[in-house]
Length: 134
Image (cartoon, rainbow, N blue to C red; front, side, top):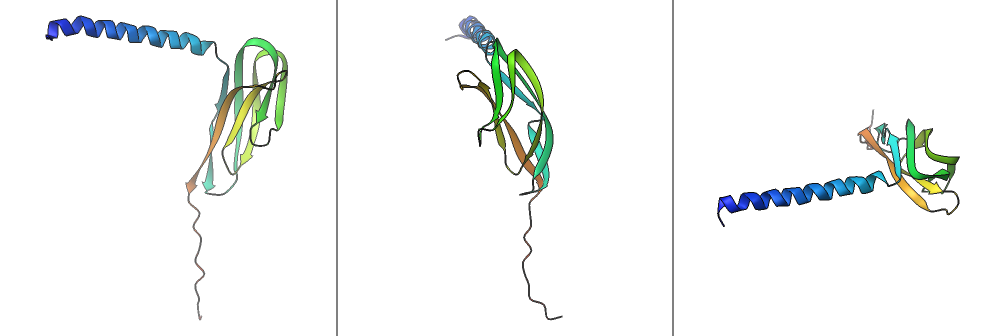
């Protein structure tokens, strides 16, 4: 196949790819959204508790009753009634990562999830017990 024939074919493929990505953007704009800022908490040492104030923002296509719930123990953190979007300041305190779910209060269905990751600056060093005479 010559290079001259390849150029129109490449143009068609690029246009099809562009149409597919535009279609995906439309579908994504209709989805449920749950955002966390910041979504990472940094502790000084590995294994230590991490503390952060996390801004939670969510948006759904339909007005309804929604709750923010912690996935690990199903603890209901807060709820909104007759809303299609909302904000909340969540006080995060944990050793491990935590997943938050946006749940429909009526059906109990999880609509969106977001994770707060925990990392650390230093690995914990365990000191070896050495015998000393003096």
